[in-house]
Image (tube, rainbow, N blue to C red; front, side, top):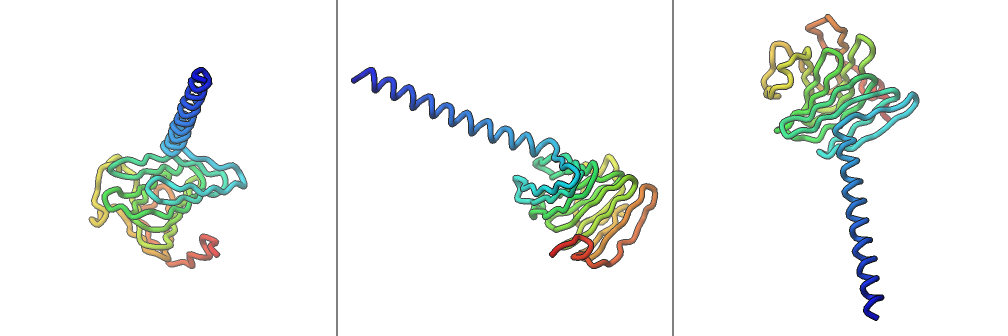
Length: 182
């Protein structure tokens, strides 16, 4: 009678606590994962969806770190290549740092490839701005205010950057071929 009901209540409460703990842990793990870094092995491709709705496709042997804050969405491409499908958010520019360069976007689709001393930025849709990376890049610069140190890249253009060459001019390319899109 009463003992069985008490036992059942205790088991139900324990199950609810265990479920709540599992949910909290799962959310905690995925959040921490997005704030830190993502890596792919040789021959591995990975697609990652960010909390803001942006989508990243990482090529093989790629490593990047993410910092999604209230004022900007910042990614450091340590090595490799990634394709970014950026969710529009005018209040939070999307910034990708690669080698000594920074690529800024609001809502667009583009790829960044970082190899030893070369960075390649390919824009499929929208536009981005590329500038030499400086400490001030972290500050909130207006996306629509072209700086004399930034180069705009429109859709169907690619920019190849080598460490000490600035400024550079984007060249028109076949983006579908360059990004091997079907």
